[in-house]
Image (cartoon, rainbow, N blue to C red; front, side, top):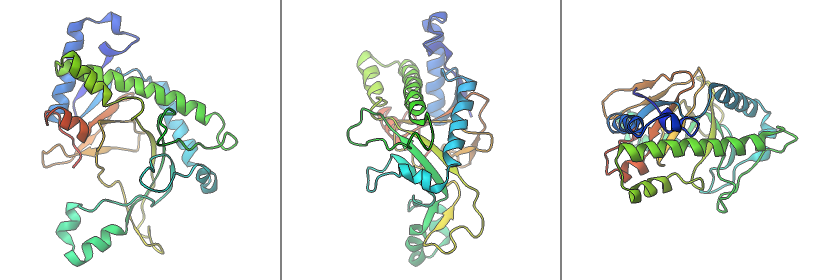
Length: 275
């Protein structure tokens, strides 16, 4: 997977670099998004200690007892990307080609409707979003959690802004285009999710109306995803190469994955590694 250093765009070091440095980094990012759809980025402004702290909070969330997690249960319905989603609440989408190839048509829909992601998710968005309100764990359950998450959200919005700056430079956009690409990643439309994939045994789903699926492929419907992983995780991409590419990240790096919205914005110049 390509690697790009975003340091020339970072607010803390921007004055130390020239416009030529930024053009070089921006073009490298645009080239990676064009050829691969996913890229390791460093120099993004989130330090190694801060990344360690993010992972520490993630473990604290998912180590809570179920009854405490459910005090921040996500809302029902289509506006559901807030709060806690526990094991098997999300279903794998119909269209997995492996299933299409190996199952008779009569069994396909029935089987897929019972397949569930064996994962837990906790999600927040902007506190300024009137349509999707955040659902918080009480301070008595996890002291300092809301304050930390608000701060992390704003920090990651800043990282997204750096990425969009670099993309605008790499694509040599005019001022109108630069403003348009930044509107794709406004702080009102960003989402911060902690995801925990549990081990899946052969018995997973027994006694329930679903089958567990480990790490199913996801749709990248947004602008882009910034992925931070612990040492146990790898994200796999298929950038139309007919093979799986494992995202082995350097320490302190984030994986940037192009979404469908950004692919359309660039008239398919950037490619989404998601189907």
